[in-house]
Length: 252
Image (tube, rainbow, N blue to C red; front, side):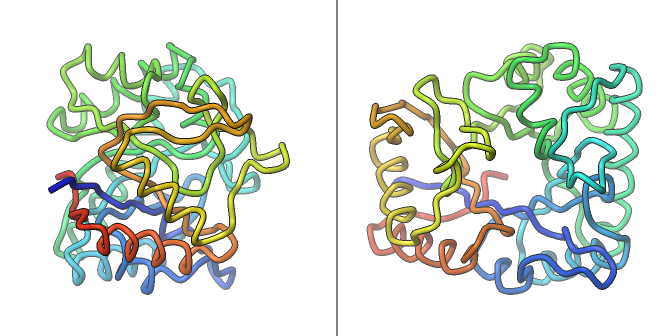
C-alpha cells in the first residue's frame, strides 16, 4: 500500500494575532512544522501547539527561518553563514525545550519561507543550516524540495533527507515553487488540490503552471495552515487519499 506523510505549518499565531486553526489541523496531519519564534509564534503559542501535537501523537518538526517577524520569514536575508548556523541552533533548542516540556521532542527540521526557497540554490546558506542540524542532533531528518542544493548538502553530510511536495502551491516546469507574487501561485479549490495530491502520490507527477508535467518523488506533502480554506483543503486531501487506499503516516 502506498504511504505518505502530511505536514503543515503550525504554531504561527503571535499574542492576540491568530493564524489558522492549529487544533483542527492537528487532527488531519501526521507531522507539525512548528514555528520557533523567529518568523512567527510566541512561547505560549508554541508550547500549546507542542502539547496538542503530543496529545495527538503528531510528530513535531522545527520550522526554522530567518529572524523576520515583520515579514513572516518570507524576505530573503543576506546573513553570514556562521550567524545563520547560530540562529538555526537557537531555534531548534528553544522548540525542543518546549516540546520536551509537552512530553515530546523535535523529530525533524524543515526550513521556512524565504530560507526554504533560498537554500534550493544558495549553497552557503544550505551548508549553514546543515551544520546546525549536525551540531544539534545528526539523527534528525531534514525536509526540503527535491533536487535542491539543501538536500544534496544534507545527504553529503550524512543526514537523512526527506523530499517534500506542496499540495496548494504551483510549480515551475523545472520543479521549483512559483513565487507567491505571481497569480496562480497558491491553489485554493479543495477538490482540485486533493486530486492533484492523489496523482502525485500514485504517479509521482504534478502539473506545472504552464501545463507541463513535473516528476516529483516525495515522502511528505505540505498542506499550508495559513492558506485560505486551509482546513477544508487538508481534510479533502486526507479523505481522498484514504478513499483510494493510501496509507497516511509520519515518515519518522
